[in-house]
Length: 322
Image 1 (cartoon, rainbow, N blue to C red):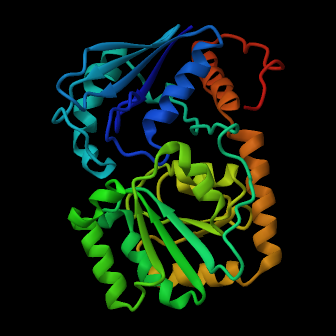
Image 2 (tube, one colour; image 1 turned 90 degrees about the horizontal axis):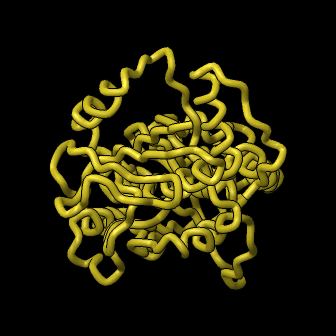
């Protein structure tokens, strides 16, 4: 079967200096490879984000990447890609004659060999650790998380994302967040660690008591999936795919976007209830293993396509959770 995958917000082929922390390129590449291993021909359509990129690039046996011109040929944060989505979709989806009635949605998967529960020794007497990973722009709501922190006593906040650690001093978003922390008297409780290499993300997530995903704008929230696979509870805003990724009252809690008061209340309640915190850990791990592994997602995508073209589903017993 010939399968098209669409990744509008980032190239699945990372280049030097590109931000990490669960980037889309990692997810798309792994999913395309997993689908190709099931015997399909896969083409990944992604926005051209560098002028030197060729039109087509081999990804693996059975999978290629096709770069579609849409907007400036440069890397853009997710919130700046939105104005170019129509331009991006026109030459791919219209050419294929896609009907909305034939569109299915499958959540991205996570590599359970990389992301799984592990014990991290933070030392005796370590403060409760909150973690947020991703862009540092105002729409990502790191500001809101910092504003919530004074009402979460005894907690420290680690902020991963943005430029590499040695370039933090020259970044406007970093300066804004540090100024906010100082103004609230939180300079000793907020640490900006900068860009996190993908290989270091699992250990960083496992070092946290709770992962916070609280953007203003709709996004899937790959970090939330990775946190669940690591057995770490999530507090997230009710936007985009986070509404489906986080199961409230089971794997985490959902709060209104752009609401530091509601975020602080949810964090206090969760951190103050050790039984619920432990239950969320177990449920998060179970959900990731049962439904969000790369192998399971590859099968789900295959099933969507088979349904659309009216073909019977292939046998799935041999698919392993990995």
